[in-house]
Length: 287
Image 1 (cartoon, rainbow, N blue to C red):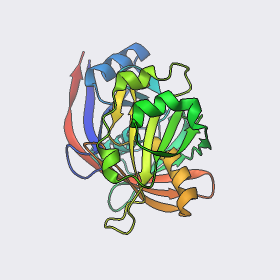
Image 2: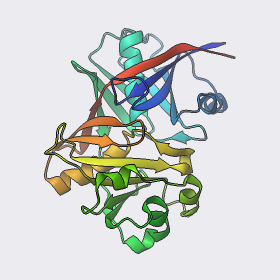
Image 3: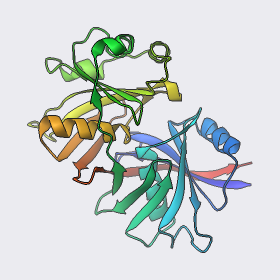
Image 4: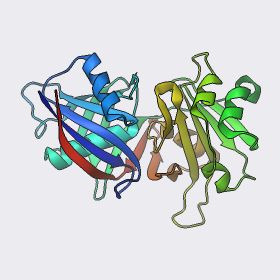
């Protein structure tokens, strides 16, 4: 059996930056065990599997597809960069003729539309709620050490704990964090936390004018640090929109690879997340 596979770097227009995702367009469903083995073999933060819903469709003509995402250790409920990469594969390599594609996922229908440069994703918004620092003191310590923390919020739907560094911190406080994934995972075994977002206010007056910065860590899902995380921005977008009083924002996730996300918080409880994609690999998995 030959399975087509693409590796694309999402939220960037340059290879070796952004967040790499593997994408496998499949004519037939495979077993969950095989999906997981392929994801472990690809060993990227996510591997995406696209399948046809309507047997009469093709990857060129169809508008709706099924999409599933696997980390090297588990299936997950929502992934932004691998959704962006999946749409790019269908538009660029399967020559899909439609302006918008819809993926049926564990998080409901997710639309992706072409634009002049890159793509726009229609994602759910996940507003977080404010938490008491003391309820997560071990996790905060493992994530940011002794850096001053302004606020702590939690998105229970996504299990993402958001830690906002104090406005007195320089950007270097975020970029220089060295988070031990074993210590971070050990800091919470309650099942409440599935990932940690560390964020801080941006520099909108300095070109290109990022409204906020972030980094994301998810050792609970087998991802020590995720380079650029679309799903985290369903939480971050909601939070910073309220704080800044803005609907449209430009965000930068400052992992070592780095990536840009254009955000627009909508009035219908959704968020548009836009970005570009660069392809770095095309081939086959032979089984």
